[in-house]
Amino acid sequence: MNLKSEIQKFDLVILGRGAASFSAAIKASELSNGEMTIAMIGTGSLGGTCVNVGCVPSKYLLEASHSVFRPNHPRMSGIYPTQVKHNFSEVMEGLRSYVTHARDTKYAQVIENYSNVKLFNGLGRFVDRKTILVSDSDGNEISMVTGSNILIATGSSPSVPNIEGLKETGFLTSDTIWELNEMPESVAIIGGGAIGLEIGQALMHFGSKITVIEAMDSLLPQTEPEISSAMKRFLEKEGMKFHLGARIGSVNRSGNGKSIDIITHNGKEKIEVQEIIVATGRHANTQYLNLKSAGVEVDSRGQIVTSEKMKTSTPGIYAAGDCVSKKMFLETLAAREGVIAVNNMFGEDLTIDYDSSTWAVFTSPQIAGVGMTENEFSKKNGSCSCRVFSLENLTKASIMGETEGVIKITVDPNDNRIVGMHIMAPNATDIITEGAYAVRNGYTIDDIIATSHIFPSFSEGIKLAAQSFIRDLSKMACCVE
Image: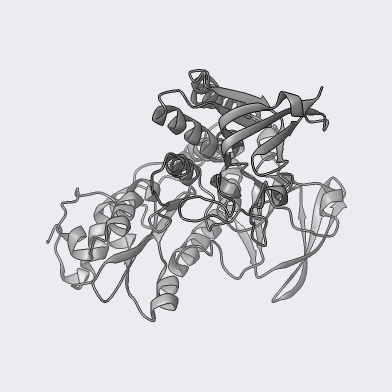
């Protein structure tokens, strides 16, 4: 087959088939009334990381684990512990079944409604700035396509550190753990970020002994230190062990399990476990794209450099999702980037707003944040004004017996605009959106105080945190404005 003589031409070529890709394809179809011809090129399951190996399965596992753990750890007087019977293998089977359902209903069946979108099952790489060569899994060249515009949305994969013996000993990642059928009795998790803590707590609630090994001296560097410390204390109370500021020397097989030699501030130590999970972040899937042929700039980590309009260094080529150089890898953010890229292809002048983008950790309690931390704002501006509100002073939290948590608000002292909000609370993911509105629209603490909040509720904690800027809360009765 002479591929060059059979080049297929499209208005838009999308590399990838995850959240950013689908969002872009649907928006392009809407803006063109279905007239725009679109090629979507990729390998693996439709839907990308989030639905297949990320947000969806991890939250399913967490919710299942909470159903086992909470009845045996009641928080209110007069409620006695109840042991819940469970079958881990059946839980995992249910998880995989739900992932299949979500992928089919939210992606596979959805794209069937768009006859202007053609799916190519293969790996795409640039031949030049407008041309993409598609190869199958064996490296056979199967198609060649060109696009008036091209969107790179190839996502990310787990980053695996170069540790002596790790590859030979074997390990799981956030991409492969979902094939487990038997719960490991003990697990060492390399990495104390969101992925490691979520998976770690879920397995711990099912009964596994969890040890987290983190190179930094604290967990979750993207959040406030008060929250990082509070979460560590909480998880330690539940039974999780931590080795912070630790360096791994080597990994080896040990009988039927695995051993990890670590070096900490206290010296050398050997950790014996049944399984190892690597949760040290993710890297952009750009290494096979031949981006040099297209003149697309990448940073030192291989992530694609874009403008706020999602434009790359090459005209007509855009990028969105986890392959883009930025601080956060989020499914909803990827989808927004895809929409912005397509709108700008149509001549709009939209920009991405990273400042008001929310992020979350779905542990129990949850952690969520938006905007700058106290340290980030102070480094940039010299000073800031902050308040930390403890859930011990929140009526709703006291009623539920879930007072482990804080709400921290950071404001610009020049005008009292809210520039950051970080929360540790049972439903932090549900109430952080108020912080996003505040950061995006330039709201002040007075705007929060002037807004009615339900009593008793966790959202009321945001209002109380705002009120703590202007009064001593210990001298305030309930519902004082």
